[in-house]
Image (cartoon, rainbow, N blue to C red):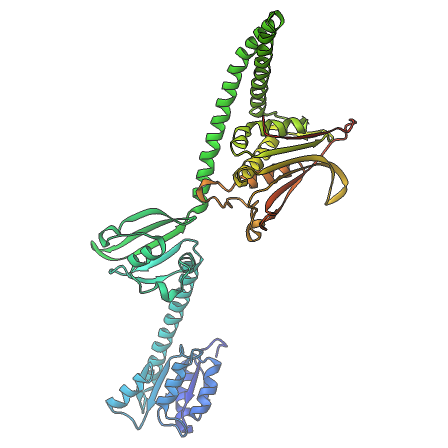
Amino acid sequence: MPETAPRILVVDDREENRYICARILRSGGYAVVEARSGREALQKVLEDPALVILDVRLPDIVGYEVCRRIKDNPRTAHIPVLQISAAFMSSESRVQALESGADAYLTQPIEPTVLIATVRALLRLRDAEALSRLSAKQWQSTFDALREGIALLDNNWNVVRCNRALKELFESTYAEIEQQNVLSLLRQHLGLELATEEIAPFLRETQQGRRWFSTQVEVIRENDAVRGGILIVSEITDRKQAEDALRSNERLAAMGRLLNSIAHEINNPLEAVTNLLYLMQSSAADPQMAEYVSMASSEMARISRITKQTLTFSRESSEPVEIALPEILDSVVTLYAPQFNQKDIRVVRRYESPDLLVGFPGELRQVFSNLLRNALEALPVNGQLTIHAYGSRNWRDLSQRGVRISICDSGSGIPPEIRSSVFEPFFTTKELKGSGLGLWLTAGIVAKHHGHIGVRSSIAPGQSGTCFSIFLPTQRVAKPRRVITKKNAVA
């Protein structure tokens, strides 16, 4: 007999009955395990036989009760039970056996061919049920592995089953979702007010607080009759923020090109007007007129400086170049000067002339622009912004020299629970008004320049504020140390 022969547990208190049954089963290619009582049967059934042949009349526990206990135990419920009896042969006995959980019922004496055929039929049923359970587990595992929230709907649009993703998206339990009408679920969790006729086919994007969702319902039809549907819900917040960031970047790029064109066109007549003012100043006889011309020349020089800084801001080199950090910082401050002045923000600039940097000027302007824009949004009216650039060492590697740029504001500060997330992509506290990419891009540019960026912040009353600190390595250039301190409104 092969080792893989199915094992069958034969339970009967009469030895001759067990012998006959075992002999028939072994001739049919089965292995046999025997038990003499109900208690012994309940022990040996835990060894997972392929089938149990169970006599009704046992000395300790009636066979109906033994069958019920086998079917009530999750470890043994899958094992088919063939109930047999020589004493209980009425229809009522057969009904009682089947209601106790038996899969079949035979009366003795049993024809060998009938016994073998019944055993084979029950084993085929067991194998089919095992395959069905495996398929159900595989289906459920696949169902739960999907990132989209999915629910199966009946033809009354009630949820029959949902996957783990939908449970997590709705922040509910399976019991709170399943058997509920899909209309009430969509109203409760997504704020969608729908009539029954609007359900299918259905596709809509909705916003709930800071999150965006895509909701879709597909209809299941059979012979043109609606048999149910499938609800698919997915969170699309990241996609929405990426789209918004793309639109914002496109607008900024277009604005940069426009500013470059305007500044270029303005710069040419400015040079001509500057020359004319010079001639007027040198030839003016009236002292009062000379003073007015001098004032006009100063303002023209200021306009000229702004246009040149605008041209420089929008121009990028293809290779790393030497960078004068104060010039870059001043050009960015000039860009935001109207907003600073509008809020009466005092800008303090301290440039302790460091070694020259080597890098990409346009990218570093973007870094400082992102930080100044965030500070501007956080600062209250009459607030203060301090920009401090000074020679320093890398705190992670003290042998490395460089320059440290601190940009500190007296704003409301960043709460501790979100402080560690500020450099993550798409993280924003501005909902869809912000892309959540500014500080992430800033950290990437700093890393590209072999530096690093950190943040300190406080929300304590009277001491609130945020300070971003950037370290950038430098090339050693012999230069006298010079400190420039500016405390003024921005020109």
